[in-house]
Amino acid sequence: MRRVLAAALLVTAAAGCSTVPAAEPATQSTADTNAITWGPCTDIKRPNGEPPARQDTSVRCGKLAVPLDYAKPDGEKIDLALIKLPATGKGNKLGSVVFNFGGPGASGVDTLDQAGKALSTLRTRYDLVSFDPRGVERSSGVRCGNGAEMDRFTALDTLPDDNQTRQETAQANKQFASLCEQNSGKILPYVGTVNAARDMDRIRAAVGDPKFNYIGMSYGTQLGAVYATEFPKNVGRMVLDAPLDPTVTFEQRTLVQTRGFQRAYESFLRACVKNKCDIGKDQATADANVEKLMTQLTGKPLNVGGRELTQGLASTGVAAALYSELTWPFLEQALSEALKGHGEALMYLADSYTGRSENGSYSTQMTSFPAITCVDTSERPSEEQIRRTAAAAMKISPLFGSEGSGGLCRVWPVKGNDEARHVNATGSAPIVVIGGRGDPATPYEWAPRLTAQLKTATLVTYEGEGHGAYLSGSKCVQGLVDGFMLDGKLPSKGATCPAT
Image 1 (cartoon, one colour):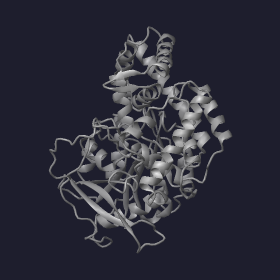
Image 2 (spheres, one colour):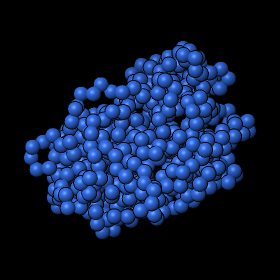
Image 3 (cartoon, one colour):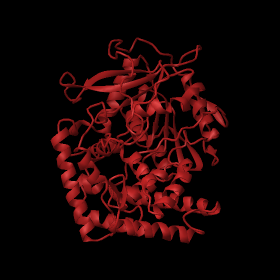
Image 4 (cartoon, one colour):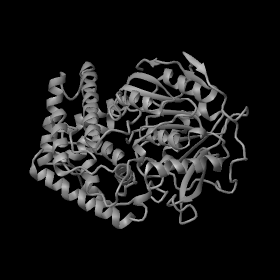
């Protein structure tokens, strides 16, 4: 799932660990040294679409050619965009560690550039590497319409839950899928997670590493799990944070995530009223005020700089802020302002989630996501299944309930397969899986399930809130991960880290 990256300092604090073999140092023996030509980064983007103030001149970007279709390895190629933050230490270098920050659809190039300071401990001995996976941004990114068309799609309301809303959603899904086929039809059949995992092994070889060291977050856990299934003998040190269960159906995923966001929202409200919340004196009042706001927005959206803050955008903004406990104060401010008729802050949160820039253009976050999701499964729900899912989700939470991804995949222009839904890393080096009790997007119950499916994994439980633990600010989690990645100290069975 998409995630909001919260910058955090990494503090090493190893505890309760055993030791795994040392990582193998980088070598040129397995690499095509001409595969990647590194140079200055010229098109890095911040979340608002603007270029950052470049300070770290050591950061490098490059491209790697990989097969469009791995069934035809000598056929047409596409370029993967990569970024590298070279190791800063002068001691024994451990090679590279590759990151995927989630999605599916997040740009690794942009995100690693933003997250570099939070990863300074690992950078002392590793080159930090990330990439835009196939179908994302600079790597043949999937495009599904211009800015105005994307504005209409992202602004769709989910309320009221009636036939008109459902018909409007169904029609928008068909139009969106058609635009994706028109603009990106060639890449759509090839953006699946199995192909992305094969791309990562090409990256491993190209940077000269005999073993693949990796940290995957959210969707990045599924990508890492598939890599470990496809190339178990090539796995080095791998951490999977905020894991997905790849076996769940659209209906199961939608309902579990709806519960997760509703629980996180209720936790936010409790924390808010405990500190004299601006949106209500107690939890029931605050909840009623937000519900009233969403109902009002279905009939009268708020004007925000010539745009309209609809109920759909407002609920997206709320969900975006629930990904990290660090953004809860801003969510309180955004809701308080919206209740007074000012929707700028909620619109900002929604735009951060959908990848909309200030100039009206969009990243591929909202387009790569369904492209990869739909090709990673053969499931194509019937209209009856979609309506049943939506009705059940709305009962759990009118604020976050929806039909999920099933409605869009039902009309997706290419078929999918289930290869990425079956993982088994038997034969790999030990893998660390981290699940958070209060994670709204990848609920904790998925963590032990993925751990069991991998066969070679050890589970760490984080008791805190938010999506993802490694960049949450938890010194305990950061210490365990850094200890594993740098020194090979495997967390003990049943390891737990308290909430921050």
